[in-house]
Amino acid sequence: MANIQIIPVAQQGSGAFNGGEIVENKPIGFPREGSLLRPYSNLFYWAHAKAVTDSTIGLHPHQGFEITSFVLKGEIRHYDTKMKTWRPLKAGDVQIIRAGNGISHSEWMGQNSEMFQIWFDPNLNKTLSQPASYDDYPEHVFPVTTHDKATITTLVGPDSPFQMDTPGIGVQRIRIEAGSLHMPLNPENIYSVYIIAGTPTLNDKTTRKSDFVLIRELNELTLFAETPSDVFMIGSPQHPGYPRYGQI
Image 1: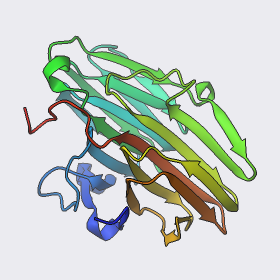
Image 2 (image 1 turned 180 degrees about the vertical axis):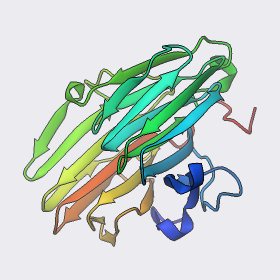
Image 3 (image 1 turned 180 degrees about the horizontal axis):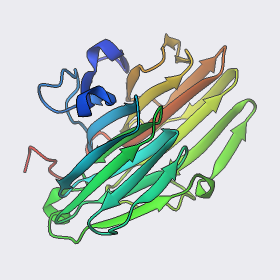
């Protein structure tokens, strides 16, 4: 398999809520949703949700997984049976639900808001017996570094306050105005990349908005942009070292 694999929107899954009020493309979807990819590493699910109008996803249950929401644009609100109150999040904020032995939640999305909802598998053999917990993190708590015309926000990783049970995860959002950014990679990780905006090249592979990219067994990545680009990247272990959902 190629070290860099590009999955365009046409090969991603899709879904909708409330008659199309919220629409999603899903790089990692559920069976029968049309996604080329199935769960891998300790990533189980990844949806890019967009609200066409104000809309609420009703109360529904989760167990075991860690459910993360990265707000890209606008505002969302969250309610769950642990906190028992509606909590707002705006662009740049992140929330995590450690679903444990069970929790139900509901989400409201404002018109034109966007978010990633990503499910991680932290080893369900352990988490299914733990109590559920919840945290949200405002944008300003995440460390930011700059490299020439690139800005890197570390959402999960060194110096970030974000806490999760899933091992080996790093999450960065990279905004680059123009030029090149050279990034060292761990060849034992798999890197999952979503192009939020722009047409950057990744080691000379041209991408487009909403492309999903898998990177395996590489020591370095060169990101080059001629126009402003916005890239979201998760590093995770190729072999987490415990049975994942479906293997239990």
